[in-house]
Image 1 (cartoon, helix red, strand yellow):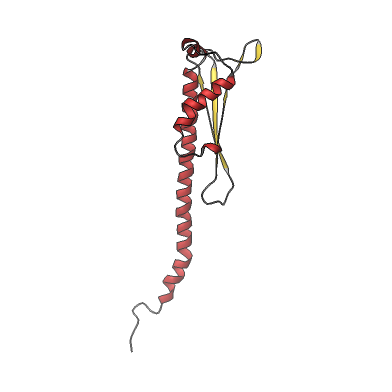
Image 2 (cartoon, rainbow, N blue to C red):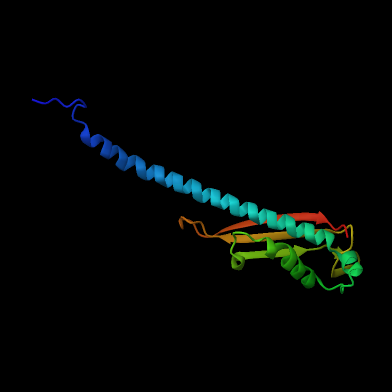
Length: 151
């Protein structure tokens, strides 16, 4: 007669693995997806800061000194995207990226944005992120940065 040293618990390991392994893999996969979300949010925040830095140093006085036309807020916003946001996109899908730049109105002239030194510029960058788990719908990652215009 042969005696089993483990006491006849051969199937216990298989049952325990059937419960523990799916939970462990789900948590591990969730951690990886969460880390990717943090990375994407960090990139959105970096794009907002970079765009605000560009806008703060390329105001009315810069355009005048460079011989460029003063332009409108649409021209300024397009320049911010072309020179600060678009070249710095690393892992984001540009079609899901949106941005908005705003300046306060000139005193006593409502509707006319103030792009002069000393005024404040605010840039908001948003990204519609679809997590890889596809459990939740798109998450809007948004970052806003504001800085005084220096030039």
